[in-house]
Image (cartoon, rainbow, N blue to C red; front, side, top):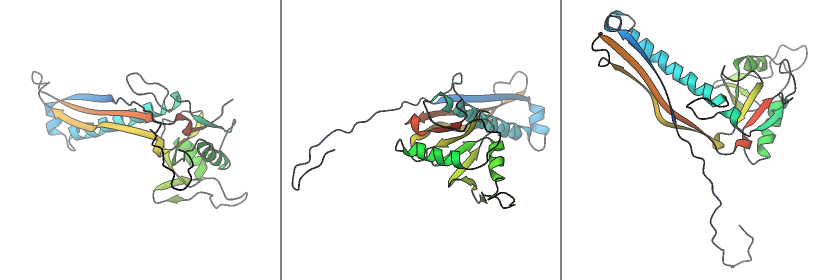
Length: 222
């Protein structure tokens, strides 16, 4: 990139590019039940088990994404050289200042936060902040798509670690690679000799962080 006079020939250059390799990992679960249990229950126990296994996969993905390292899975947010906002040792959230600081921290590295991820207990505290002392009017309102803090959507997960107030996530620079969505299958083959039914769920998921410094952790850095 350069400046030119009028009618100057613009020199062609190759853009400086890099790559982030994301290798999806497999998370899976399987449960065996008797054929009698599969045939005679109402609601069908096989369907209930399948739904439970799918929920466990979702929890496993959340756990790994919010963790440091997880055996046989991609490393998560805590493994990054992330940006940070030092909240100090706070017993409860009193205002939105840390979230505003996080937005500007992301902008300082050329990024834009698009959402927050926090523990449900933190979201509950935020929901109760009043507009001023002595008022019963809450500062934040729940809208159709949930809670919004400093203009950004809030996602809650009990897997957020106890030291983190919230994570600020830039959608454009944080990717999830879904190589294979959650698949739940039922098979009678493996249990042929003992008349059993296997219910199995599998997903292959990977995480990619294109600019780790643009992911902002709000926490007590002391």
